[in-house]
Length: 220
Length: 220
Image (cartoon, rainbow over all chains, first blue to last red):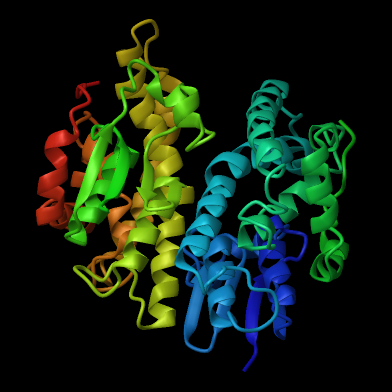
């Protein structure tokens, strides 16, 4: 039976998983979850993920949540197929992939997701306006992270070395949405980061996922 | 040559790595980094970790930062020695370990580290007082996470199943500091979480690390 992914393809965390499945050229079934109707908060969904968030993966008797745990599982299960996302044949290279994956999780993601939340999610919810102070504070944090990336990407083509890995992949969906905002200059003004981003979005797997990333873009 | 860990043993993230080394009964050398003198911001340190944070691991020609990447590397390198921290013989069990490790990283840690920062780190810096609103907001988030843990730990002894794994280990240092605050009731009032915590701190590896966790405890 093919893997099932529960979620909505416009969700950045769902897109992270779909991107990984496409990199591995693996068949799957996307089971839609209506986020606007809060179907991810229904008991049937909470029994799969008690935190009430998409995506959830089902692979036979395994039910798995947390998008980065899912991408790691897919990458490991299909380690000898498609793109080598984990550099699994060399434990030290694999450790460097994990290191930059942790950088995404603990430095990049908190800053960029806060900006995306304010500029894209809050306006969708209708009642409130984006909090400019939160945006500003997190743009500053993001700039510091991107400065580190600019230096790193002057030495290696991708974050974990000269191969595309999970460490790069995990960045893609939020960066895609970020590039729709008026703050895209944070990426475009750093030549190495810009070249890296251009490379990431030229990948065939990305071109299969990006049409689904349709949360309304904003311009502020 | 034994692994070198650069850091101060009172740092929660350094303690996470030391705990892992002790679970694997592995020799190492702790190379002190004076955080109060900001030695982690010196060029020599930044050349190992451009984010200027402890710990950094050196293992021959590998230099690695990000504590959870380090624990994953140590657990993998010594997978057949000491405690099996990753359930590496079964890919689905290993995926569940990663899932709960991600829960620690994305749900538990942001909340508890914000509380610890306000109640323990801010007072150490002298000039400011803890921000009560930040403490309150993050205690609420932490309660929701612990509610999920309470239900989970009613089904399995540890987070990822009936064996102690990295998913549990990664929680230990911040929880230790949290239990020194007046909010320890969030753990103590949840019987399953309390039993889990009591179990975690009875482990021989913990008893080797806890004497180093000496950041001044506070009572507010």
